[in-house]
Amino acid sequence: MNKIVVFLFLLAIGFISCKNSEKTIDKIEIAEKYFVALNESNSSEMKDLLTDSLITTIPKYEYEARYSKNDYLGKWLKWDSVFEPTYKVVEMKLENGTVKAKVSKTDKRILFFMKKPFLTNQILTLQNNKVISVEEEALNFDEATWEKNRTGLLNWVEENYPKLDLKRYIYDQTEFGGKQLLKAIELYENKK
Image (tube, rainbow, N blue to C red; front, side, top):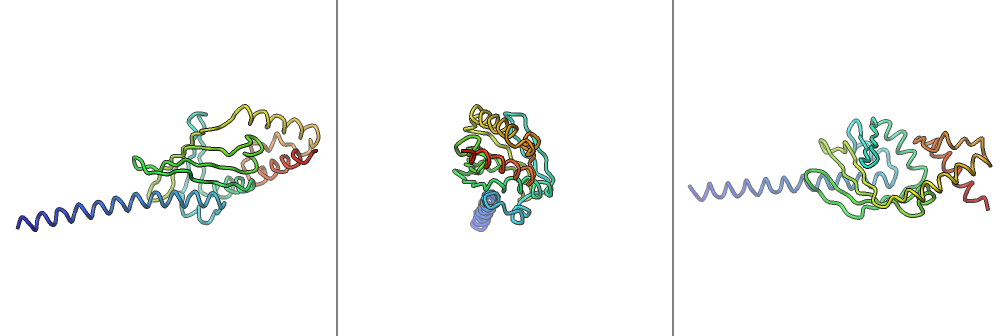
């Protein structure tokens, strides 16, 4: 009788361990799919990975943005795709139920303003196997270089292409705003 109880106890522990391992793998897999969808600007894949809304935060700058799924996919993701981003996960782990990832991002906008890839720590919180929030910490943001290049671009465009009205679009995170900014960057880089 005792052998049966011990056997059932060990079987239960094994089952629970496998189930917890499965949850860990699921969260990491979801996070990996999230970054692949970002890298490919794949809104149909991203749609399956998000809850009905997404909160993105950058605590250092007291920044918080709340997106409905439609706004995130229909506006922000399209804006991001204009600059042809490349997201590379440097490392990823599960800690206290959240996924922590170190991510390198490069795109035409970042390379123009900062001259190097942007490295961040990101914390993804999942609810019901979907991403509900992303907290971001910049690791190498070069504010001085970014500001210098931003100011130079704005001044040059205002002087040479005032109809482009870049001051209106530099923070417009829509596909049209992204195209206006990219157009300004390309004009500026080809001015020589």
